[in-house]
Image (cartoon, rainbow, N blue to C red; front, side):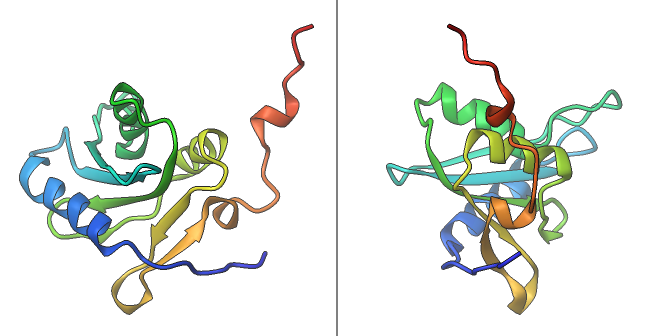
Length: 137
């Protein structure tokens, strides 16, 4: 695996942190995500925690972006409530992000180690859903 770091979108981190500070309340909403659409817009969302496995903030963000007409995302970050800072995506989110946006950058790390990496660096030698679909013919 060759991890290449890309510029960090600090405005995106702050947008997610602001949503985490102001919209995450109690146990139902504990994570916020922000993504930069290809057209420059910033889209935000929060998770919908539920004991049955509610969606993470990154997954809610994908739907929110689509509802706003943003089908191409360049970079995404998740931030925890209670000033927990940047939180890397879980395995399910990594797979979904790869399937929807195979070139997306993901902001990870903490403190001086904050960096942007490609989703493929977070899932080396992964299963790519699109590669295994039978084409309708």
